[in-house]
Length: 58
Image 1: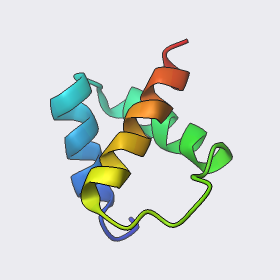
Image 2: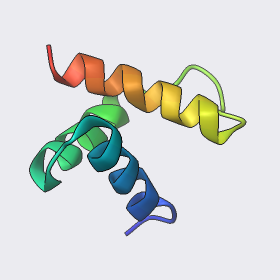
Image 3: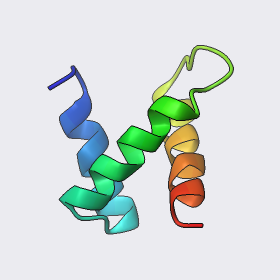
Image 4: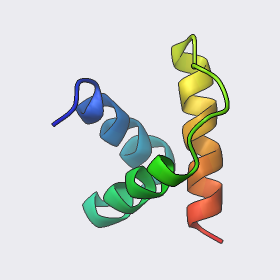
């Protein structure tokens, strides 16, 4: 597993109530909608993840 993956999965689970399969789906979608620039903080990372979750749920 990539560094930080467990904390990302925990964030998605705790914030969005996603189970393991949905979390994996969000992470997979995230590889297709990469951020335009390097994320410089945890807050930026979480905000980007939130946009990926929004796209995943549409």
